Image (cartoon, rainbow, N blue to C red):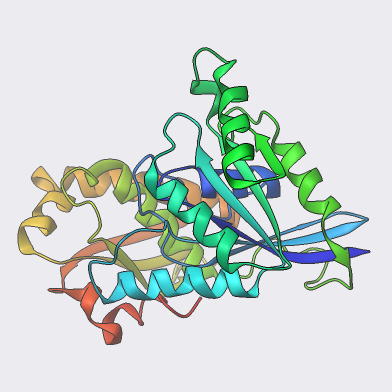
Length: 298
C-alpha cells in the first residue's frame, strides 16, 4: 500500500479546486469562476486498492489585504511544509511573472519533495501545439521533470495527474479510513454550499467580503424527517446587505432555493433553509469573528 499527502498550490483561479474535485470524484471544494474562493486548507481523500492520496487544496497565492488573508497565506506555507508531494497548478492560457515566482520559490526552498506541474485549461489554448511550447519552456527554464497538460473542466488527463502522483507516493499505511472522502463537519459543507450560491449571484458587487455561519441544524417540529437549517450570510457593509437581499428579497430567495436543492442532494432529505443577512464591519480583520466561521482552524 502507498500513501501520502499532496499540496495543490498556485495563483487564484487557476483551477486548483476543480482538479481536486475531478480527481476525488466528489465535490470537496466549492468552485467559482472568480478568484479567491477557497479560504480553508481543503482536505480531500482518494483511496484505491493500492494507494491513498490525501489532498490539501490551498487558497490562491496572493498579497494579503487583511488578517484573514494573512492566515490564508500561512495555511499555504503550512500545507507545503507538511506535504510529501507538491502539485503546482498553472493556467496554460496565461503564465505570468507571478507563476514564475511561485515556481522559483518552490524550486529553491523545497528539497526532497516531488514537484508536479498541472498545466490546466489546455482546452482553451489555440493552436493546441502551443501547449508543447509551454512545456518545453517550463522544462528548460525551471528543470521541471513532471509536467502534465490537462483540463479539469473537460476531464482531459486528470487520470494522468493521479497516476503520476500515485507513482511518486511512498509505501505506507492508510492515513484515513477507506471510506473517507473529506474531513469536514456537516456545518462546514452546508455553509460552503450557501457561500458558493451567494458568489454566483453577487460576486461582482461584493467580491471577497462574504462569509456564512450555520447557526442551527435540527429535525423539523412537525416532520422529523425534514432538516431545518438556520444560517446567516455575513457582509461588511449595510449597502452589501441590500445587494444580497435584492429587491423585495428576490435575490436572497434565489440563493436560498439553489442552496437548499444542493443541500438536499447531499443530505438525502428534505430541507427547510432559513437565511438571513447580517452586517459585521471589517470582520476579515477580526479573528474573534472569522474564527467563529472556522477560518484558520480547518
